[in-house]
Image (cartoon, rainbow, N blue to C red; front, top):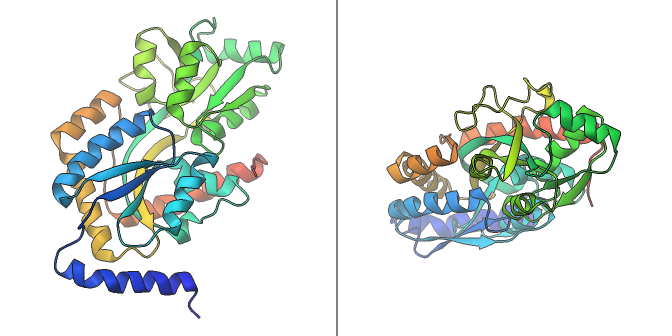
Amino acid sequence: MWSRRDILAAGAALLAAPALAQGNWPERPISVVNPFAAGGFTDGFGRTVFQQMQRTLGQPLVVDYRPGAGATLGAAHVARSAADGYTLLYSPTTAWVLAPYLYRNPGYDPLADLTPIGIIAETPMVLCTRQALPFRDMAALVAAAKREPGKYSIANAGTGSLPHIMAVLLAREAGVEINHVPYRGGGPAMNDLVAGHVDIFWEAIPNVTQHVEAGRVHALMISGAARSPALPAVPTVTEAGFPALNLTSWIALGGPAGLPAPVVARLNQAMNEALAAPEVRETMQRLSLVAVGGAPAAMAERMRREGAVYKRIITEGRMSSE
């Protein structure tokens, strides 16, 4: 028995087939939904990738910001969109493997309602503190937080975001009480950390390096198997005594379920070609991003594998949101 959604998806694929056979897709601009506020590093990097993809596709990719509810508002909008290749989702880890398990009613199932196109890049996460705090290592921060429970605040990029999960894990692993302050994206959260309005923030390295080098924030530890060449003095989470926090962020592109295979293939090709472009490679090097690329199937497998990991973390930590 087919559901109404299955019938609509199949109909959309049939309608798209003649145009695809003639090589006419895309015939108009493509909307790319960013489920976070403008200003984060993913925003600027995404625009660089989209400009290159436009050269392959022949149509512009226009960013549509739909922040809120830990990326679920934007992701659910894409999941409900027509499977014609004109509405895509561009998001870090949050929308693909985190928020769906944190929210009781996220409005979509990433494995059932979204079509993977490909993982663009990945990056380690850095734990930062505001400049005025005296702590220069995790031992000092944890000791101070234990002396005065609830005194320190930790920002996140929205409920259900990777910084939120890592903030909760940090408090659990360190045995401290920290006040959580949600924002509508990494950019606004980092701005407030630099301004001194919050004390601590987990953020991806591209949005951190310039502030550390300028002395505006302090970096205490970084995720990943090894220290980053961009921040060689910063110890890994394992070196700092928190191996459970060895989580990385990745950025990916997808669309609603039922995208015709030719559309997926062409979008994946355009993405991989963009990753090979000198402008994109230069941007990734500057931001300390690692290119991933590859086939949609590899992204689907990572969604299944990491989704199970984060679901366990969220369930064991009794993390949930309305």
